[in-house]
Length: 179
Image (cartoon, rainbow, N blue to C red):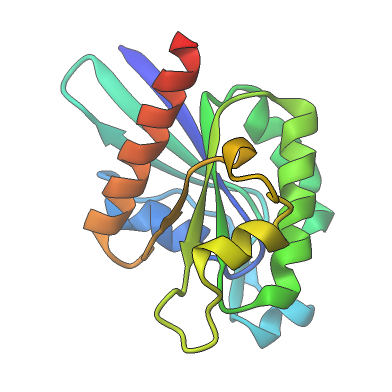
């Protein structure tokens, strides 16, 4: 069986665990624990190691989805999970621009450790405070559209939206392999 490993990363509360739960065909393995720091202002539980889900495409192909913790104190898990990844998606909550710096730090961390293809998924785009794709790209450090990875809107609560994000990530990954 061929396995493609996709990492879902991003700051706290961007929707990583929900993203994986929306499409996993197995019960998601998670390491959620009660939030005890400033994370508790955003949500009650937080991932402290990783989430794991699986999506099969027939008997010979499966996607393994690994969700990282969002807190930088768990960056040792980012390092472990990105090492064998084939591609990753950076989820960013578009309605919390103060956390864009965290997203930039995660992206830089991942890029230092792996050159696998990546895309950016903007979550919470239905919020009245959400930044649009163009301004978010600039805030994330992409001043030149030619050097920017694909940026898409993702609703982690909707399986169809998550599936489309995975298709975009896989297509982008395959295009990079052909170059």
